[in-house]
Length: 142
Image (cartoon, rainbow, N blue to C red; front, side):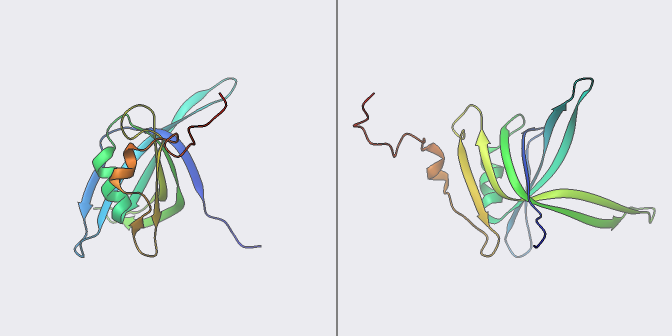
């Protein structure tokens, strides 16, 4: 059996996402989400760093804002770097391939999937206004 590197989180953005464009023209959007946890005696919050790429990054940068609730699914990635004083440090983030916008607003309950092979999103901004009821038949018995 092979290994599995897949993570799923639901949380709220702590601040507005930051979008930049790479030299070859690809969009990259980074944001952090707060995920709460609770036991019988303690509770707390974990901050999860998330990166999105390509069309998914453009859509996240356009529609997400501080406080937005999202479902994020992707792979965990750890980067190694040296700070200004030469000390080796590590940074862990989620490279998202699916972002679902939750909560209130025009972006609610919308899933955007990212195909890392061709950097294309499976949803367009026009799809953000569709609801799950748009495809249901009108002849329901209730």
